[in-house]
Length: 178
Image (cartoon, rainbow, N blue to C red; front, side, top):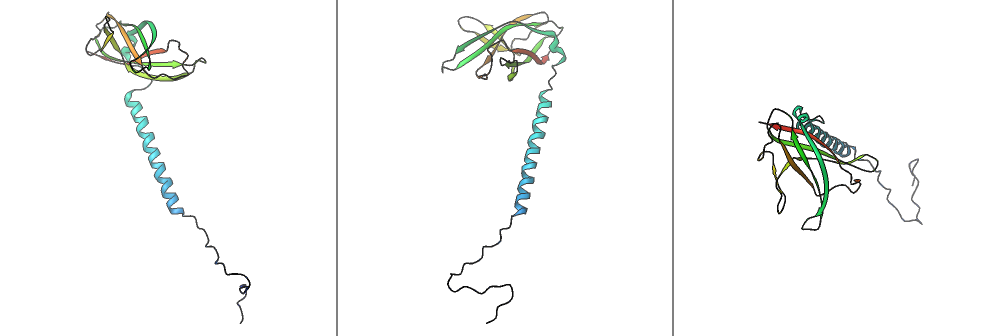
């Protein structure tokens, strides 16, 4: 029996082993998957930057310059669940000509190197009563009239472990007036 050139005849002493099929990389599903991932990432980036600009830029409202926070004090206590809660209390003064019925403060906690380890925004809460427990209310309930000063309290349940336990930077960002 003659064999075509380039093909070796089977060895009768060795069992026949089928040749392994050539592996082909499935490029089409890989490309479709990569495009889908890029589209999802693009959507996330679009909405995260859009949300940031609608929440506001890093620049405070113009009226924020008329509000000053002074006499800040820090205190740390445990809540009923045994978790540590940090309070920042101080005084809020309205030096402008409008009544303030809402304000948001940006609080920046730093580490021992002066690097920001946590930045959080909270609505300003005004202290309403002090005895026997401190009660707070929003500026919607207790608006701050021109020239008026009130005590404030900010409450933080979770602060980065890298925080140096020094007074954080407080910056009034958003203000609504009547």
